[in-house]
Amino acid sequence: MITVSAPDNTIPALVRKAEELGASGIRTYAETQAENRTTLMMLAGPETRQGLVDAVQSALSAQADWRLTILPVETTVPLPRDEEEARAKTLELQENKIGDMTREEIWNKVWDQANLDQTFVVFVMLSTIVAALGMLTDSVAVVVGAMVIAPLLGPNLAFSVGVALGDSKLIGSALLTNLVGIGIALGLSIAIGLLWNGETQMGELQARSFVDFTGIAVALASGAAAALSLVTGISSALVGVMVAVALLPPTSAIGIFLGVGQFDKAAGAALLLAVNIVSINLAAHAVLFWRGVRPRTFFEKKKAARGRVISGVVWVALLSLLAGLVWFWRI
Image 1 (cartoon, rainbow, N blue to C red):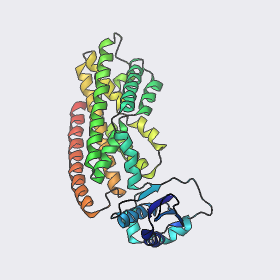
Image 2: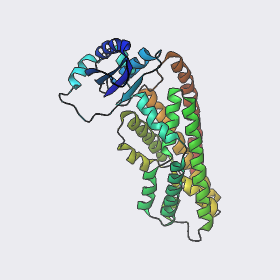
Image 3: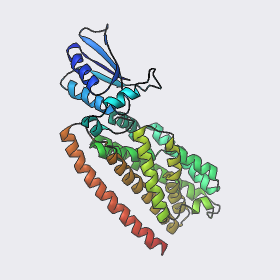
Image 4: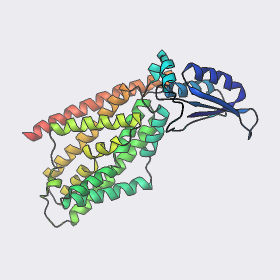
């Protein structure tokens, strides 16, 4: 359900555009709280939603007082899908198709994950403790629990979305949050390693001390799945991704190995962490480009395109370098 609150004189043009782009259930209501204001309500499926949101923003960009709101709808009777599919065949809609989520919904979702706040810090600390103790006690269930918390996955996805949209503020916030999160996890796990007096030969810990080419393939596939679940709104798929390409266990392993003085093992864990981070970002970069996540206006698209090219080259170069290190490590 898309609702638009705007001046009365803009509503007829918005209604015509909504009908042209395939919206259904279009209704208008005069607002009683303010004069010269009307609320427009309409239903839009994944095929039409991005085109409608773009059209409304373009039509109202010169207005000083308006608001667009997107509300999720579980179902509606009669179903509008057949009507929408019949009408949503214009070139504009095909160009604007992203997935089940509009760029505005995607941005809003990742912006929350990119913010550095007390909740994020607490999640990082708790998941680091869980991951470290899970590996030191060789408990698979506990380590998986730390993976599912996965506070570091969000900032990496937010960084990729920021690059796709050319949003420097989102990029900066995601980068800062990611670096602080890794720093906290690394510092806390070093402290745990310094305090640990037991063995370090547990399978769960040793498994994070090396990486092979299979790990690179898993990280790439998982990063692509994470980005795809983001743009389609299938959040349940993220749980499997969190487990498949976790970032906190290798970060904790680096700190533990450093704390107990096993620097060669720490280097292997650092290589695993680097492979996972680069693979997530490269795969997310590719998926967001494939699904058409890009800015709305021409100049923003031009700026973002330059950033996507630079980012893609950097991530490919880094992954190639890491693959070389993995090959060297194995021999």
